[in-house]
Amino acid sequence: MDLNSIVALLAVAIVAGTPLLFAAVGEVMAERSGILNLGVEGMMLVGAVTGFIVTVTTENHWLGILAAAAGGAVLAAIHAFICITLKGNQVVSGLALTIFGTGTASFLGKNYVGLPLTNRFNPIDIPVLGDIPVLGPILFRHDAMVYLSIVLALALWYIMFRTSWGLSIRAVGENPAAADAVGISVSRVRYLAVIVGGMMAGLGGAYLSLAYAPTWQESITAGRGWIAVALVIFALWNPLRAILGSYLFGGVEALTFRIQTAGFQISPFFLSMLPYLFTILVLVIVTIRLRQEAGVPAALGFPYDREER
Image (cartoon, rainbow, N blue to C red):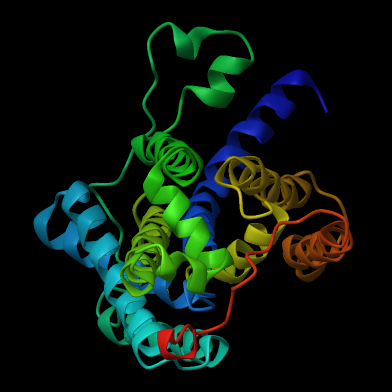
């Protein structure tokens, strides 16, 4: 593989990793507050279809982005209500949300299947920076949503680890009783974290239908929501590590396409399995690491009832 092929592969890895980055960073924020959300796949699908429909209708992809974020937020708010207010089982609620989101997306998008998108996000060739050898094509010739995903990931990292609000999120995820005792509203913090996570998942879905593959197809996410959930564990609940992890997973996906086009006699079904096999391998490795390195929020998955404090 020559240098040009490597550069092209790395550039595609960033593009393929962008929807994962949106969803994974949002899930990091939700889980840091103590709420496990397994409905990421459903939220991404709703974000993809609402973003596509609004963009086709208004011919404005930025309005589509806002609609996608709103769609993800609505599903996340349902999950938050069940898990925080009703204190329901977070795993069951998340799985139900994925099923509900998948069905809702299919229903809403049934008249838009296969419809091409004319007003899509196109790559932006940044002057000067885009002309830098090697780094230019890899980093500075992408569409606006790629840069938006990086900016949001960095912003959420800063909020999480450099602000009092981020300290509240982490405190609620580690010890909600102690956070409540010092005056932090556990419910409010968790609601906001989960809803912001849902908005990010919606943006990840919108990237698929508005930029990555500008059309609407049922199950366009192809399991990326589940990979994003696994990516949170890989990143050890850190948005900065999620950036690197997303592009690593995106690189695996890009590599499968490269192998297919290179003419290797390998079953396409096996190649389509590679990202998910890689996910399982990473989970095994990270699980071993977690025994030696703290990472998972202590209160993750447990409802909080202040009367039991």
